[in-house]
Image 1 (cartoon, rainbow, N blue to C red):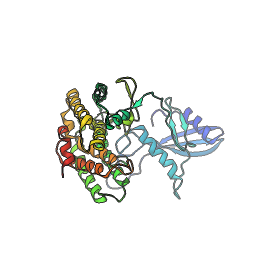
Image 2: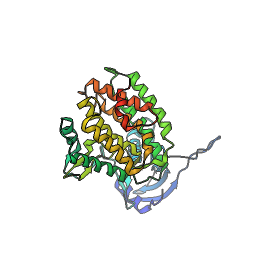
Image 3: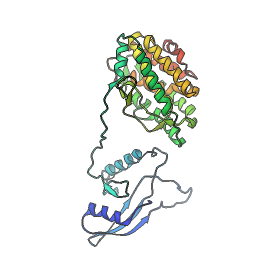
Image 4: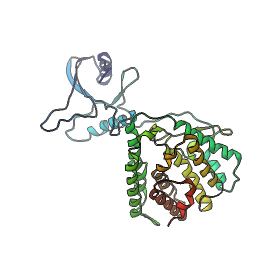
Length: 363
């Protein structure tokens, strides 16, 4: 535990236990050895702290979690693990008691969080109108304006710009693809949120979707060269336009790094969704925006490989849009077309934006 200074530890322990504290020893703890293969990996580096409180001898173990794979890449991952430990250790009989939960601040001081029950985030307020209003106007029969084209182009160019930033940790790409399938907010979590049956949607159909997506995981996980800076939830509710093409983004999700197809399918999938509700297929202004966005993105980035990646990310978005939980009033015919699109795209080795209606109409 590099940087652990005795005076800071004493100050923290005094605040936690009261009285005069003196640290007498800091001892790194290792794993006990046994016969057979030695355990060479662990999630952290605990240290035993010997100290006195008003002269009374005490001892405790200070644990941290080391950055690394297995879902511990981000500070928030490690915080989640430690907070769970604090809440769970004392609920199990005969378990070593958790005495406190805390954090190191930027100066190396130890700060207690034991009284925290929920965390919050304070974010600046941004003026603007959600891009969903533009979508709703077009969905209601509004004419496609030059401004609509310019705004779609601005959003496309923004993605091209952020996706130009390459990540350096290949494990984060593997993780993002894994979470696309198994995360509670993604494919498996969504399918679990569906009722046992909703019209034509059965557990068997959802299992079929999952099985096809699982095959895609093994196709994608080796493409770690594609790791890029991403938004992660680039849909019309998270985009605020002010004047003209000036916009801000909200609610970045599921990590800084991932697959560019996640962002591109999030927005173009919503063009498709709006068009299915208005026209029963990709048509009118949404057809124009859908094709224009894909063409421009590939032109700006040169990323033709994205067409070989898009399918399971479209599946994720379609499961959201077809969900009776997220969209309870959606007509069954639109749900059917979303599932037709999803299954057809998952079957195709490469997504073709020019064939969107062919995917919808496939038997």
